[in-house]
Length: 114
Length: 111
Image (spheres, rainbow over the protein chains, first blue to last red):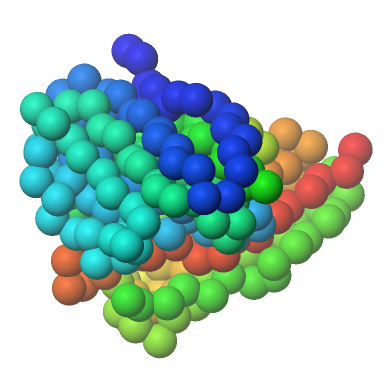
């Protein structure tokens, strides 16, 4: 069974440019998460989807970040415009459902904003 | 958001030594998970503890959930270089299904 797929793995952009990350969760997983992880820190939740509905986006900086999960499968996270402080690893995870279910993480996208 | 503090932040030991990593909070969690993350990869779940006082063993790793479900520990016996990685605890908040991660413990086991 394929794991969570993320692309690209690495992205370098100049500040003020837009950037998008893509995630394909494990087949059959209804819940999808986007996390931000700074170097040497634990992941911080940005947004959680139940199927195509964003049920927890309270920590998503909505002035520059947006996300969508059309059809309740793949998801895209966008930043526009990017700032220097956005440099981090963006992790996507999925689980069968919310609650005490194992979250399976993708390898992440390492974003560098110059 | 409920906070989790991990200690120590960094740990460098020799192969064969024992170690304990701590995860503490002033808040109660519905459950607590431990993950291990290697460079360039996402975290991988090691264990989930749900009941206060619960102890789970995974080969040389022993996980304990505090009686009050506010803290947890991970003990590794006879550490090996393959145990090197970032160990993260994550608590499921009682108010919802959000996982709050600790800052992690970076473990290095030297041969």
